[in-house]
Structures are given as structure tokens and as C-alpha cells.
Length: 289
Image 1 (cartoon, helix red, strand yellow):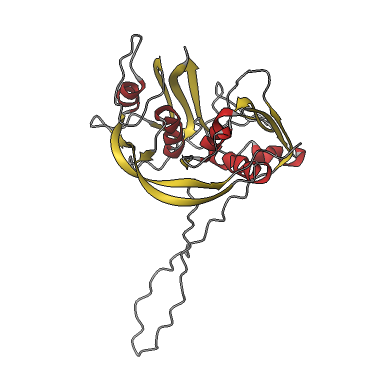
Image 2 (cartoon, rainbow, N blue to C red; image 1 turned 90 degrees about the vertical axis):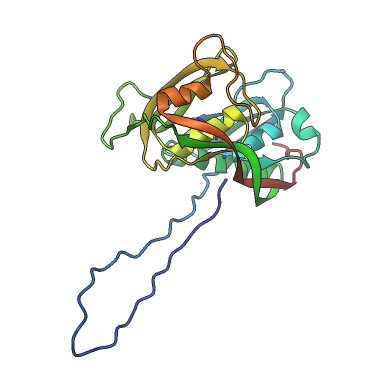
């Protein structure tokens, strides 16, 4: 998730000013009109209409999962929730953020369900950030830091990814509620570890987001691949790594690092990488329901 991931809030707006040419006896050769670049509006988070946050007393722990109409988790700490926002600097967090656990069920409005199901993980993560700002009084700012991580590059053998076609129906793939294909990337878990990924018109940004979940460190896309791709990656189940680890030994099938190279034609290379980092300035225990 897919990887889940990942916050880059920069918006570049190009403005083209009209140019007036002075008249001359010999008109200059006509130049084809160039399209004026248009700005991309920032994504507006879909707010949760109903949010239930309760202290976990069952000791049961489940994943952080988006549902067809919202978000749900059991036994998750604030530290775990913050991991959904990309690379977060949590060094200054109070201790309760990692020790206290919560059960959360959040639902969006009925009128927003169709739009919600078309969002990618990064857009849905914005709704989690809004929830943390509202109910946990989260205050934050962004900084760029150089951190140990990985660069995802094309292996010497060349990319093995299959470029997706716009009219592909994916008859056997995951679907949205309206029956249309769900584009993106799913992560497979087995034996307590990650065992692979399945991409359905997935972007490199989505792949690096899932790889960040595996490595628990930043992963920066350096492939130069800008399309969407279909692929399946199978690997031996293995635990998550820490920055700088390369290829842990496994007993059943290739490690994820080896599988990325052998099956996708890509490679994870340890490197110091610039990372947009969310720095937590303030956070409180959640307000009552």
C-alpha cells in the first residue's frame, strides 16, 4: 500500500505573461501558440462525518485500514497513526503517544462515498491528518532533512514492469463499489512479514510508499518511470528492516530486495536522501466522543 506509503505540500504555479511584438515592415514568421500551463489545485481532504475514538481495553490489535466508507483500526497508538502521514519526526512526542492505544472507527458522509473510493492512499491520508488535527489537536510544520534511506532505481537488467493500458478492465482484480477497477497497489502479508506486492495501474509513487512501510525508512523514486504499471511481486515472508540493511537471509524464496530486482527489474540502493518531514509541534490526548 499499499502501501501505507507518506507528505509533499509544494505547489508550483507557472504564469505565462502575454508578449506584445512591435510592428515591422516585414512581419516575423508565425510561431505556433504554446499552451499556457495550468495550476493543479491542492487536494481537499474528505472529512469524516462521524468519528469514534475509544481507549483500547481488549488488547486486540488490527491493521490501519481504509474501508469503503471510512477508516478503522483497533489497538493503534498515536505514533502508529502518525506513520500514515509519511515521514514524521516524532522525537519530541510525549510517552503516551507510543504506549496508549485506541480503537477508531471513522465514517464519511454518504454523499462522499463515490469520491472517497476513487482516492489513492495519499489523498485518504489527508483525512487522517485532519482527524488528528481536530481530535488530537495536532500542530505540525514541514522540514526537509537528509536521512538514511533508499533510492529506487532501474536495475542494470532493465525495467520489467508492464505499462498499464487505459482501457484495461482487470476482470480478476480488485474493484470499487461501482464495479470499476481499483487502481493502485496492495501489499501481501504472510507468516508475520511482507510477502509481496500486487500493482494494478500503480504508480512509482505508490510503490515507493509501500516500500517505505517495509524498510521503515524513506524511499525515493529515482527510476524516471512516470506511467502506471501492472505487476506482481512474490517474495519470502520477512520482517521489516532498519535503514542500511540490504538483503536479510531467508529460507523460503527470494528476499523482497532480491525479488524487486529479479521480478520488477528495479533495485533499492542505500543512500542519504532528502525527505520532506512532518515535525510534530503539539499533540494532546483525544477529545471525548
